[in-house]
Image (tube, rainbow, N blue to C red; front, side, top):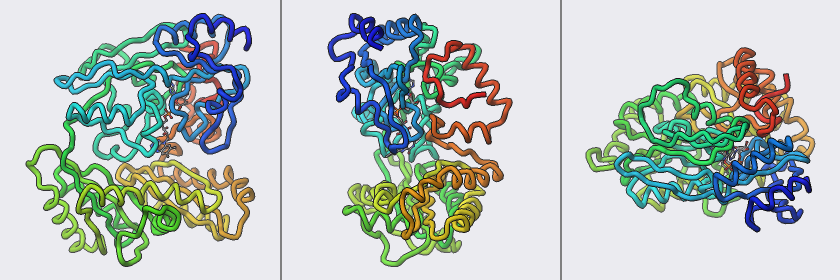
Length: 469
Ligand SMILES: Cc1cc2nc3c(=O)[nH]c(=O)nc-3n(C[C@H](O)[C@H](O)[C@H](O)COP(=O)(O)OP(=O)(O)OC[C@H]3O[C@@H](n4cnc5c(N)ncnc54)[C@H](O)[C@@H]3O)c2cc1C
């Protein structure tokens, strides 16, 4: 690697290359501490040309490259091995252009997601990708993982926000398609191939993204469901009665509320009585043609009449809405204080979500008595974070040593119900065995053929996404 270091130094400024172990350490850490990276060189280019030059050197010396964004990914996709170069996009972070007439923003890969949201808002526009890591994840990482988040129900995944992409391909060439066209049927849609490829097919350097009118009216309610089954009928009713304004619809189990309120000081139970299941929902609109307060009240009245919900509290202002949303974020934060947790990021056809939760909770409880299922998340799009906290009386290490076994049990049920073992977090290294076990062979072979065609030397993020054949 010292040879690589010598070749890269003349291409980059002083801040563009890190070789000191203490400086490199943050780029090797993985959020969930399941992996620890091993590289001895981190490159931090600040221009597309610099990235191109780095890739050319790596091709020449057959050094593989691990692109890294905000390093918030949950599947080990940005983790490096010894002898690999970590290529951090953090300094490639300019907003290139905002085009209000075209309703687009063109951004470089290292832009922090929240900065893009704020820049759009300053132009009275809305960029809808939103997730709890938005203050540190980068748009390049969001694109590479096709991130989801809380607004997918209304706006779709990151993939659906993209009109153009720029990337360095594994042969060192620059693919550039940033025209921002809403119609362009000229052959294969290459940008969509790169989105969700987790750095295995190209290093994303910039993107042209869709913007929407800024939703200046928003209402939020925390609702106690009659039971788990009624979540789906309530979702259907909310979709029907909200006139296209339903934005988020998040399922929260009572244990999740307990975790948040027990451990996070800003969280408190919003309702006076306890219920097994809740939904946190938001309606949003721009302009004033729809009165959202009246729409929400009418929706809740209809839901009570239809025996779908038992109780509800409406946020009276933005601060109250933020407090309700804090509960949703506090589930994961609170769960950290409850010992070990085994996590799953699954999706299922929406109609089967209650059945999945019931069957999977029963199966894991039979396998590990006392296990505490905490299934929560984006029920509006069928994506449940099926998180399992350890039994109170069990050791953390003993519980976590059962991760593979429990995941297989859960993912087998997902597979039987026609769902996916990875809804929004991707594959990385964490889910390679699942890819082998559940992914259709024709799909896997086609993916391998694409990888081999674009990256025959396997230099871009090797060992991620595709299990060895
Ligand atoms: C608290 C918390 C909440 C989260 N909530 C959600 C959620 O609601 N929905 C969701 O989808 N995810 C969520 N995540 C996961 C994570 O934030 C997303 O996967 C995010 O998109 C990763 O972005 P990043 O910049 O941190 O990428 P990284 O973690 O740095 O990288 C992720 C993958 O993308 C590749 N990559 C990064 N940048 C580039 C690039 N420019 N070109 C090519 N490849 C690249 C990496 O090699 C790696 O394979 C959450 C994470 C945390 C910590």
